[in-house]
Image (cartoon, rainbow, N blue to C red; front, side, top):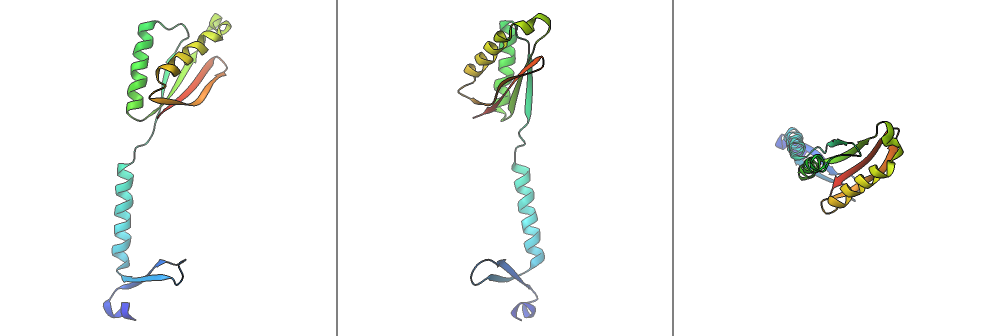
Length: 133
């Protein structure tokens, strides 16, 4: 009755409360404000991407350092990193070298990242996923 006289709507705010809470306000304005709020929240959120770094088990020290610089940059941007070690031919006989390399990476980034997926072998590839702390 009061809402009709004011030309507004009676809006139920919290129906589960005892007694239920209702307000007299403009429903169109309320919907518009909530849409704006949701759009603002979407604009500010960061989508976490998974960046992939591919290596070989017998990587040279300088190449390794270049890859590690990229890994650190990805963590600074807030992205996850998937390290992929690809074994070819006779490298398959020396899986421990790949494991040593992934452990070396893990130790180097221990302060800025945590292991999300432990190193595991899938066919000819060994993978490990790291995420920023």
